[in-house]
Image: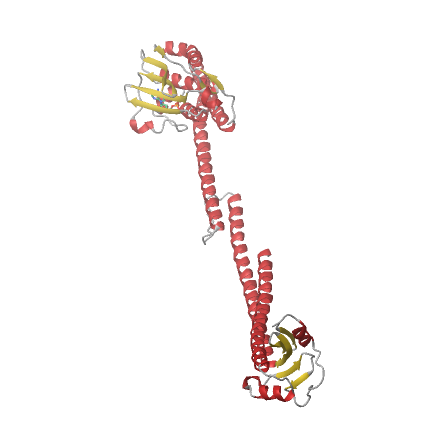
Length: 461
Ligand code: ADP
């Protein structure tokens, strides 16, 4: 609305400016022509030796160009010597008109011009002194009534007014149309937002055009796409999780039904109850891992420390030494340069734990597991290598996905849930690290985790 108001004010000023300029232009041309006539007459009269009514009338009557102009010639005492209006002649009287007085008393050669514009009539008056031998000996006074020129000015002003009004009307109409279009597009955007809010993430807004609203629409669509992707991931996760939880629950149900419905000896009942316990244990482990996964996502802010990796790795190895012994796995460590890194110690523990545990779980009986820590340029490396079953090439890109297991039966028998590597991946990312794997089916797997070395100088800068 402010924009319309400004346009209106600008047009109004334009209108006033045009009217004034046109009037000034006319007046200027009028002044020029009248002063020129005055000069012409003054020059002729100045040539006379004697200034009196007959000599002046004689000269003026010979000048054709002055025929239609009311003209009075006065001497230096302002007494009229000639008057073109014979009906109302002022000859012999003092003509004390302001223009005459100014021309006689003003500077030598001073031209005087004045005008009055009223009711479509322009009255212009001019006076020029008659100078002879450096002395003012009289003056020429002229007066013109101009109805034609006045009408012209009036019509010009009227035209400018009309043009201004038409322009203002156009601006007004344009504003109404523009505002209507704008608000209809905003309404469309609002409707789309409501649809998305109701949960339909497949909806996309179509703004059309090529302006800021279009960019807003594009941004909105890309936001919705991300919402849709995250919603898809959430749905997938819920469905995977419930599927995974369903299997041990179904086993428990089956086992309890068998115990209740069949006559069994104590030994078989014990075995069945033991299986129930295992399934319950698996459920417990899975819910623990699901909890730690959601913790990674819900607590982006963790406590970082500047630490080397080997103490944490040693703690993990101590924890898992009995599991390694059960499977007759020999553990080797090669801790070379161990530079400090900025990391959450709990995260590092969890990363090392899952990788070492997998290296034991998916190893062969009597196999080897090597844990190395070393520096590679600006990175500190933790490497876990085993001589186990390996991961087939087509599965390597999927092992970091939630609930992915290469060999479901083996994973189940080792109590796997398919969540360990997904947790490792998220934790490594949260600590600005990277993880890579190289593996050959049947030969073994190496996981390489890399974190930037903490450089106090870089931080201090
Ligand atoms: P799980 O709890 O099943 O071990 P992970 O996410 O830790 O889940 O691992 C996903 C899958 O990747 C495992 O089921 C297994 O098939 C494979 N895998 C992980 N680590 C190794 C390894 N060191 N050697 C061979 N296969 C592995």
